[in-house]
Image 1 (cartoon, rainbow, N blue to C red):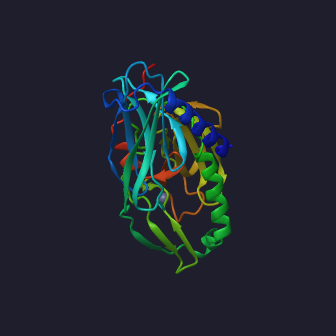
Image 2: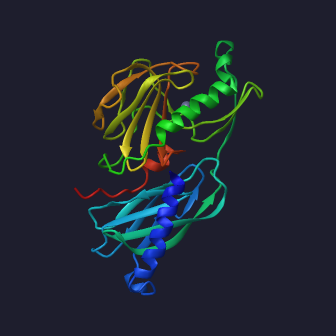
Image 3: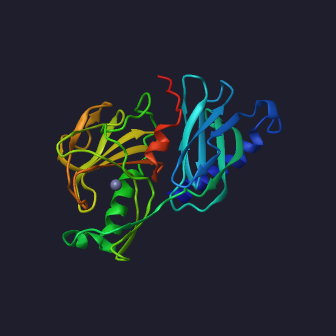
Length: 296
Ligand SMILES: [Zn+2]
């Protein structure tokens, strides 16, 4: 399917390039900005494309993933870029295509500079009753299943305004930590951030969206995933009770569950994760980005 898409796009590019009136006319090329342009591994960036008003669609490709941008209230087309925690470092091309109806208007290549994510090394010892949950096969299976859930792309921005942290407590761990469990029994990465939280405390949706997952998993425990559109999803782990079901529309601040101690945990706390374009990214860095509102 992806191959077919690339072939179709290549043909469109060839046809489009021939039909493009003045591809050398720099005045008419959309103006592209990426912030931040230097993107540490496991972080997000905002792509803005200022295109002439006659442009009807803009798409961008990074790491072979092609996604549509949305039109913002300030007139720019906006999309989100993200890098994997395992991403190679260096310069990577971001291709930007703009269209007027079905004909290609422009094709440009910008780049991002992927730099070291400043991850901490963490040595963790879990108690004996949790040791079965360090099985690498079990871990791979859970992370692959969740990756499938997180990889959906809803080409519509469902949220408004900045994201909010789901619990009021202080953050007690960093994103992306390189974890060694029980002296080499399991090597893993911390795919979210942890907050201090008490058993039974309400957990709130970070932003508007739709529930796409609400069930128990061995490691994440009682886990909920909300799709916010434009490739952004949030995950809420180790909860006690779950108050939502898949398919449910959610407003920012809705109580989706309660803090618990389910899954691979030593005690009650709240683990929050956020993905962009299928990559786990630092939720705190994402929440600090300025992302313009979509036009109605
Ligand atoms: Zn955690």
